[in-house]
Amino acid sequence: MCTFIILRRPGHDWPVLIAANRDEMTNRPWQPPARHWPDRPDVVGGLDELAGGTWLAANDTNVVAAVLNREGSLGPTTGKRSRGELVLDAVDHPDAMVAAEALAGLDGRAYRSFNLIIADNQNAYWVRGTEEAAVEVQDIPPGLHMITSRELDDTGSVRIGRFLPMFTNAQEPDVGADDWSAWERLLRTRLHESEDDPRETMCIVTDRGYGTVSSSLIALPSADHPDRKRVWKFANGRPDEHPFETLIKTAS
Image (cartoon, rainbow, N blue to C red; front, side):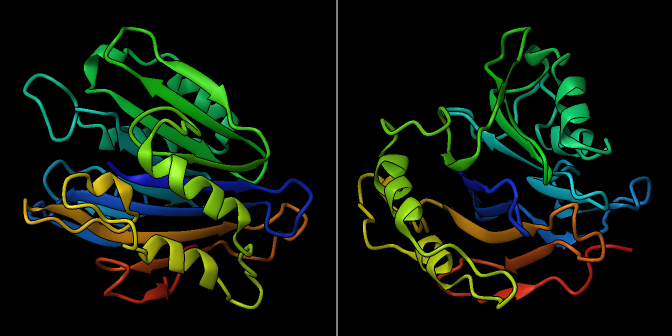
């Protein structure tokens, strides 16, 4: 179960802030965000070496997409397409609205269940696939929102119920000053870890070969500042053990 947080602030110099922890089998090979796809030279994302897709990516027009497994659907299944393809399909489009419209026509039966988030500096969408033919597309309104393996802002989820108020009340990142400290602390926290239920923590560590394997912080600039580049800070491993470092270059 991964975790994705998005803060939408229309009218702000940095109208979209994103925080995300990736939770996965620790022996599944991957590479950190880069331009891994020769047929998509404008896309930066982490590479899932097993299936060739990604869990989180952005293109050079600042469309960001991320996919999360829904409850009980970890790992691939024979006869189903990789959910990592959905992220690449989303960032093939020039803006989030066009991407959401295109992915609304998916046949959800082709994939294991998923939550797909698509955002740019104007709009954000949640695409919900439950292995039924039709997928569901919903707007994500302004404000702070959190999703894991169930529904958006579902406080019945142990992690969202505990951490959504913490993110809501935390100091917002100051992108210009490169101060993400409050969000970094939350992404790293293991204060609520339970031996029986690792969902109670943000940074998961288990003895079952499953846990948090990387973490991202992303800021998208306003269209009023076309000279600004997005910011992507990445922890290349568990964020309680690895520092967040800014990707050297995210735009060509």
